[in-house]
Amino acid sequence: MRRFVRASRLSMLVLAASAAAIVAGCAGSSAVQQSNLARAQQQQNVLANQTTHLQGRLDKSDLANKRLEASLAQFQQRNRMLEERLSVVQEQSRTITDQLNEAKEAQQSSDNKVQALTASMRRRGGVLITPNNSLLKTVPAFNIQDVHVRRDGDVIRVELPGTQLFESGSARLRPGAGSLIRTVVGELASIYPKQIIGIEGHTDSDPITGRQWRNNHELSVGRALIVYDALVAGRHFRSSQLFIVGHGANHPVVSNATTDGKRRNRRIELVVYPETSG
Image (cartoon, rainbow, N blue to C red; front, side, top):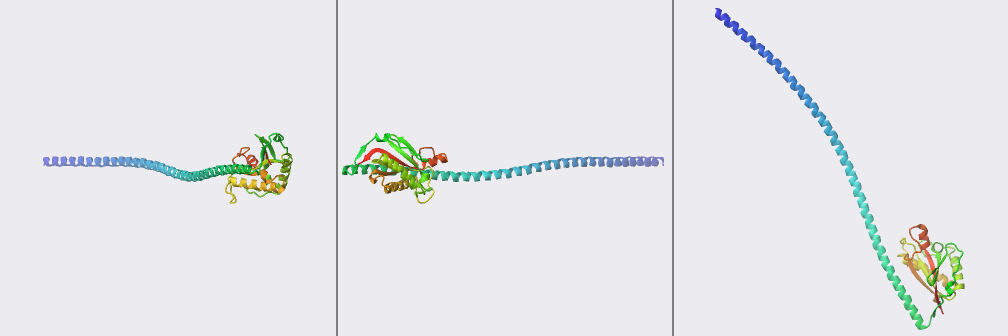
């Protein structure tokens, strides 16, 4: 009986210890779970902050990409514009080169024709050319605005301003141009009645924009021809004393870099030669 009681007490003690161990184990497991949960929440917060930071960097990167794309589009557009301008400049350069070559050929042809005509007339006895350099020591003076007189080697050049003679871009005489021509030519005829007179047309360097003239050389020849007709009609000089030349923009007296320079270069020059026509 005593043994049974002892065994029962021992069993109860074992059960009590087991129960205490179970209770202690449950309490320890709950603490661990709470610690793990707190650690997981902390990691989640860190990941959320990192995600927000990375999203901000991604947004900034997208904005920078958009700006780069816009800059690239502007650069490509400017590049196309520059290429178009370069093409236009190259075409203008080719045109100017062609015009210059044509002008040189025309000038050479004109010189050849003048030389051949002079030689032919000399052979036929139609014109007797005699030099008279002493006569050209007398330089006429004109009190007329923009009319310039200068000695050029053994010739005298009288500049008539194109702005007073012709309408812009044409060979039509302006009102009052006839009076200017008669005044200047009358004075020249009184001093040099038998001299050879060259009528030279000059323009500025601006290209021709209208359709009436192909280039500045044609315009300069057309203007010189109009003045030639005026001189012949005025009967101050015989037609055998006169000849015309169109230089275009090849012989400026001043730079064409300014508006005043271009205005000065648009002119008709009456060139008095030492030779006389007999």
